[in-house]
Image (cartoon, rainbow, N blue to C red; front, side):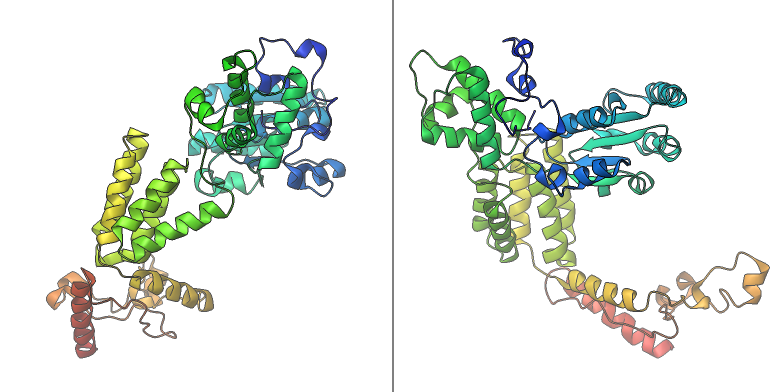
Length: 439
């Protein structure tokens, strides 16, 4: 568990401290007041603290990296409100299991007790399974608390998100992890056998994950011989783990991804590979890098080389399939391809311009000439009247105007004279001349 404690005297009882229980479990908080590290949610003015104070809790989605306390906070919320706590995992739960949970919750509701249903890895439920929560959320049968490490906007149904508040859990910073180490040393009545540099290295290895820092600490205690003190180099050998070179939540992360992006944009494959390698070596999530390469393919290359997006996306999927370290080569291949591809931001600029125009003129109806007329009334109103089927026109091009009548033609996309866009520019010039002639 990743939670920290506000005082040395809370969180465990003598019978809890058996040597057979993992340290992370023995340090699990016993009340929301014991939790430290998520002050933006549980502090005096935190979002969750305000909800509890008001006496009204709604369904929520806890979004954050592993080891940040999502499960424990959900359990403590149920304790705080005296609700029944039910926990399921989307990995092991099917529709039949969900129905049993809902039926049990309805029975409790008739007996005057509410149910907090905690769903771990909720993003792993498919769309139909997610929809099954909607009725029981609406009628108050359950208060849903879902936990996910993935962006809810992409992984959860809009209908479910509209009924739940998303609360973001943050990775623990170095001070929080250090406090947790001190708490562990107090519980164990034993200082970690590491020097100062090794202690900092151990904190970096945990990478913001409180459960991880406690697991690593246990490994260090097990490995140490009487009187032995480990250096940072010793730790890497014993734990078989490198310490990240930078804090992914701080400037180093953003500086290096910016450097990688600009090296690709600047057509420097060697520099791009260097920054890619640095981030992978530092423990950056490879799929994050894969997603950024996909973005670069669209933003900085676009249709100058249409294969760039295909290759970047294939590299991301290849890593997802192969894992580390084999899949890292696919990311490197895509990185070099993007850096050496012809560059164009024409689609990026065109999209931004189109979006501005759409926001300013979003209420304008399309011209009736291009609308279908499935009813007699619509046909009598002129829908589809005069539409020319382009495939029947000479050269497969009718030259009609498809913009709203009151808006007129707009020129958003301006291809550059590089790569495949040179060919697109020729086509657009040809169509423009043909349009002028036929109109």
